[in-house]
Amino acid sequence: MSHQSLLSAEGDIYQMLSDMGHEQLVFCSDEKTGLKAIIGIHNTVLGPALGGTRFWSYASEKDAIVDVLRLSRGMTFKSAISGLNLGGGKAVIIGNSDKLKNREPLFRRYGKFVESLNGKYITAEDVGTSTSDIEFIGMETGHVAGKPEQLGGGGDPSPVTAYGTYLGMKAARKFRDGTDSLEGQRVMVQGAGHVGFYLVERLVKEGAKVMVSDINNDRLKKLTDAFQVEVVAADAVYDQQMDIYAPCALGATVNDDTISKLSCGIIAGAANNQLKEEHKHGEALVQRNITYAPDFLINAGGVINCYVELEGYNRERAYQKAEIIYQRTIDILELAAAEDLTPQAAAIRMAQERIQAVAAMNAVM
Ligand code: NAD
Image (cartoon, rainbow, N blue to C red; front, side, top):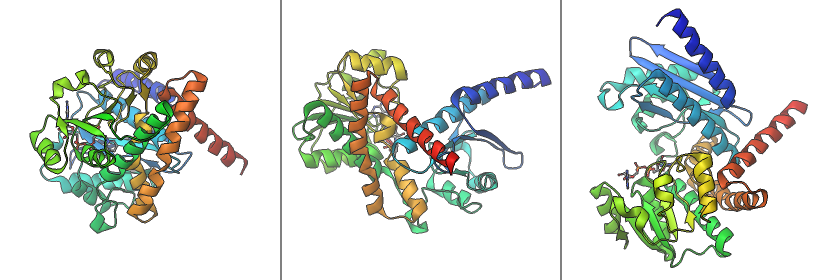
């Protein structure tokens, strides 16, 4: 790259940092291990920036930068709205995770970079990284969460995430219909993975009529062996008669193509970034009188589990802390209705207000 193009790329990066309100972007490079990582620290007003490390083969370095900026900003709001004393951060490692066979050197080297930030950034598992990768990182730094249970960590966060999602769903029902019972409600759970499984368990127990869809037959079988549910083909999800749609697979499933088909009154699921375009599709749901429980709040069980791990892990405490999701969802839906906002915008506003209040408090102390 010439100096000129390098400069113009830098110019773009500072503009992005300023537009999105980031504090710091850390580029980590190590030729010996092939490590190319970027750590994004969005905001540390509430506490250290916590967020997972994603290992992904990005089409370009700019795509990786945009992703880490977007994801770390999302973590700020997620932790703030959930009442955690954590800031927002995220990291990406550029490369093909499946092709990396000898993982120890790269992840330990990465751990040293995390350590060099002295606790300003705490990492965890994400797409493309596994518990054993986290163990390698943990050999070089204590600033990791999501460790396996045998190492004193919180283990699989999915049961806590599913609990929070279930509470968010009940809260949306309470706001909309005056009762939070899910008995007899037709709930379409898209994705029978880690979270989907535990969510379905709770829904079935409460007497909901559950429909499930997955593209992976093994996952579906595990679920149908355990619970009485109706299986729906992946391409027929949006055409079902349903009261509640619970996206628990991919993001961006609420979009121009699907919104007009959806018959539900409520959308409440665990997937990240469910609205393809936050503002446009959030508005479209309001127009169609569909109550949307903001994803980054109701799927916060995972980060809550990490937070509790930092205090000394206790699963009961993690479930207890996730209970905030119920009332917070109601508060956000009420604020959105009162102020003519989308629930997503109301949730972001509430998160920002908490950060500003704590920043103001810190300034006078
Ligand atoms: P997972 O990979 O275990 O499960 C996802 C499931 O979705 C898989 O079984 C996959 O086959 C299925 N799927 C993929 N494409 C599909 C499609 N088109 N139709 C139907 N099913 C499809 O993931 P998970 O841990 O259960 O997480 C689910 C979602 O929740 C993800 O979006 C994740 O980012 C989000 N989330 C998870 C946690 C957590 O604690 N695990 C926390 C916060 C957010």
